Image (cartoon, rainbow, N blue to C red; front, side):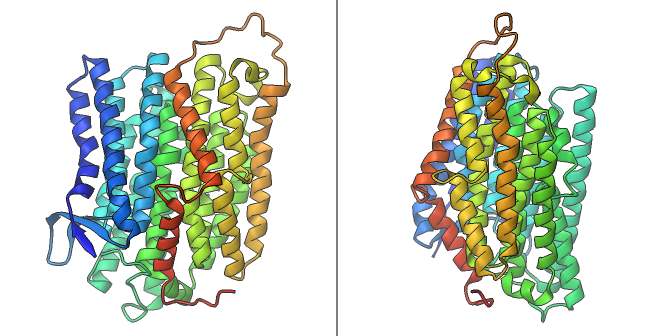
Length: 501
């Protein structure tokens, strides 16, 4: 049942309003930060209020305006979109308080512009998550690009300028590719509405045209998802403040890229059509290569944030590979890994930000002995690192287990080896950071100065670490990410047997 309700619009609009209020509060830092905090809590509350009906199989829907008889700017809460909406709004709350602590601790300039742009980014993410059709998705997709650009440029130096230009070139080109695909889809089908299982068929266009459209749209999503070799903008963007890096990796830009891939595969083309036109195997191999190559590159990075950046490239390719296998369990695992990676990677980046703020050291080779000085931070970093490697009882294990089962279900056990190898590589590039912190003695311990502890930064880290543990032990605890992922994968694969084992 479809419920006509304005809550999807309110979830998008609340942080737009906050951005305006933040801009007018430039001279009042406490008020500015209060608007940001209030907006994050209200947004999360609005999203949570819609979860029960979605779990019961109902949909909230709200049309902002009707453009043609068949196309409108419409927001809709299906299970797949709710996973992303709940995840992003949930993580924005601790991320917001962390940002306040980080900005004050580092005496960052242009804080008003930062918080305003951050709020607009979160509105864009909500719009992407709840978009009911390709046009609505595209408009918020491009708005996110424009809103996140000043965040990458935040430091306003030469390196930030080059990184932001690179980011803009990559993401704007990907947007135009996506727009070309949308136009082609509308021309051959007469609709843009997302439909579980896809709405395109082989009767609508020649096979080669469907293949070309698929490649265009997947390339667009893969740029923002930083799938190799389209990843160049992501390591460069690490010049941005750490909260921005966390935003790019865990909540917003790269997550919208993989969510775009999930939408195109599951709600535009569908498993049945993709199996018929035969392009999805190439995507699976590209994702597998991206997983392994990025993990090997991460091993060689001494800069902490760059190592985490290459880790993100590999971990997001897990999601792309899961979607490309087209089995119910692999698609379910892809949605679960969307959640798992976000929770773990936001923890790692927030830990990195606190480490850098207190020690003024960016390179892993310089982090010897910090486990004694930063015991809570390093404990959280270690837990999140084990989660990335797939340790049981942490959230990363749940998603990777379903991805591996999905590969077996699809009759492609080779990809299980890819995930196993990637897990070992993840341990290889993250655990040494913990070893350096705990097992290496600082030769300058007596004379080295550390910054003050910021509890605004430390408490959010503890909260997201607790999420990683709780979701690993009780994966279907409210807001029921596990059940929502199951509902999404079942809807996508309904009516298609696919020859699964």
